[in-house]
Length: 495
Ligand code: FE
Ligand code: ZN
Image (cartoon, rainbow, N blue to C red):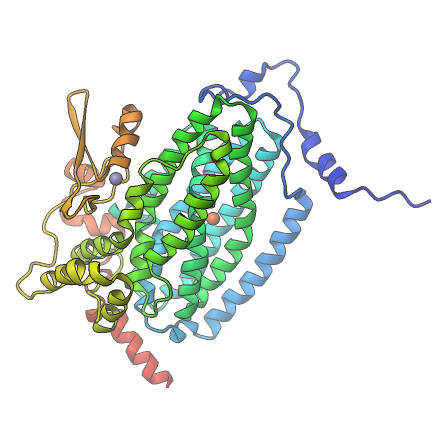
């Protein structure tokens, strides 16, 4: 007689959840040493279920199938010389920036989710975190392989390890993930699964994805496609984790609120680079940062998601009003400073062309005409010294240079500072200052590139480019670069 087939849920329980056990000779606190450290109270660890009910066998089969497709696409891109289909090689200046960020961001996400899956005693979360950890490793490997295609023809992709780990600008994303990794396991989970995945990744994969597609970048499209198919699991994990903490005990709400405040601001600041890509780098632009921010952050996150959390006593994240005020600023602020530091960057920068300016005016209207167009006029004056001569002051928390304006005064740069143990620390915003003030002993340890360079920890000053893994030609102006000249030449040859 044929055996009765087990249901999906039963199968899942047998293969995953029921493998969890009560320790008999090791105390619970010893098995999960960080579990009480953050003050999160969970009464019933088993109540939570992985909404995906993925078994290891299923997971491996689905992922292997995706890998097979992805590598076929990757080889095809290489064979068809698809880099020549790009609207303009200028788009790759965005991909260089993305590559630097993604390589160390994804790898550190992999490490973080290992940590979460080891230390959070909720079986469903542990399993979901474990699969996410494997996903993140897959992402970084695929990204490195894809940019390997570009590295054959274009500058700036050649020393990804050094760039990712050492370049001064990459400190922004490194400090972001290292902050999460050195928090307790529940905060680490809230930081990335909620703050990053739930609140911001739509912009990364949907908005950036459609911009990449509009510019015929098959590499990013392929990477975005295979990565995004893991995203729904990651976002669900984020929502489940927040709900689990809030529903289990009302005492958790103030702790969770603080994490949402902090990681909303940290994620938002980190995404400044994406604002620059959408508004400036893309030769063919699809959605402005301002529009993306309104659609995904204001409508979906602030007015949608946070509305759903109101029943637990959660309010909108601290300083969200400032993020809204900044929506027609940050891409321009980033572009203006990056334009001045391209001699120490692994990507080329440029001033907006006439065509770019028409679009920017259309999207940003008055602020464009009254503020940003004027600043560009000044900065592109032949008598203006384009290369920034020194080391910029960096924010102790987010590690961006001080380029953000006062919320109430667009013409005045915002500076905040705190005194701690006789030292003065500097910040770009109220958001970053508040994060520092809450845990000064953590952030006083931040590895600030400008300080480390001056302390001699990055080798001799005259050899910094080598330390960062860049050649002088990797930076400078795009329209004077070999990348631009080659691309024009190759396009003609192909035509
Ligand atoms: Fe990822
Ligand atoms: Zn900051």
